[in-house]
Image 1: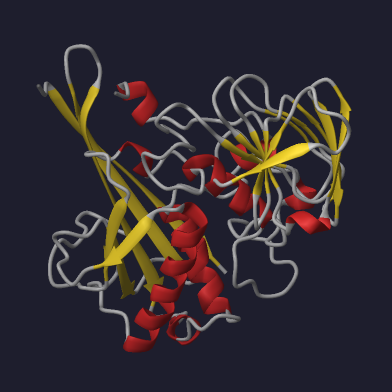
Image 2: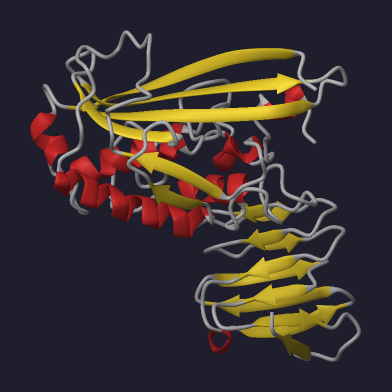
Length: 346
């Protein structure tokens, strides 16, 4: 069970491109009971947020076109995080709420307002953790842009930005850990306010790395990610050359593009590659060390036991000759309420 400190703080990775995007809310990894399903709704009939002075009008329902685009976005983030997002018409059941509203500030295009409450016992162990998130798109100054949430539009990119907040990401310039100015733009993270590389219809590489750190690709209460069953993490690098070192659990390391150095440390660790096995050269270079080369670069591996490709997973034999491997299938005392809002500016 998690302690209050664990459930109400941010678990950092030690890598700037990830930690600069990690916000404190909402901490879905600690929701009780251990479920991998979160419900979202477009209903504004009940369970509305109260006390949010940034709302200048009552929330209004998404149009059918906005709803269809949002369903596509939620399916995308489900595939990326492993969380099962289910739509419900029952607003009292939903944890995530989508609506249009007139938002304070003429430059505010969207807003995410997240909250959590928890209970804990005399041992400071959390016995109940409940979170909720309200995602609003401005329907006043930015009504025209936000009415069209089709992929390839600025409205859709704004929606992904707000969903990023809903998933626990922050702006790279907020808090105490920041991205360097050279990479504080949307080519690297959609959480940035500096636009680069045109309009984006998917999260950028730093966003993906942060989401894999949080959720491990297998959702809530899985084998990877924050508050995972056995402490495993998915540590993803960048398009540059990275040196990634995992911990003592069974971790996944993904160097991405660039010539990377991956060290699994203790545990049974996996190096992940997005292509087919046939696209890579795998060579044993020493006791427990390997070289993997392909379109993503040439990586040096140490303390890695498994190689996972798009079509197969290999077990590395530590004492095998060069290029030899084996393919394998593969009681409550207190309650507190905390809230946080993110306003977005064009």
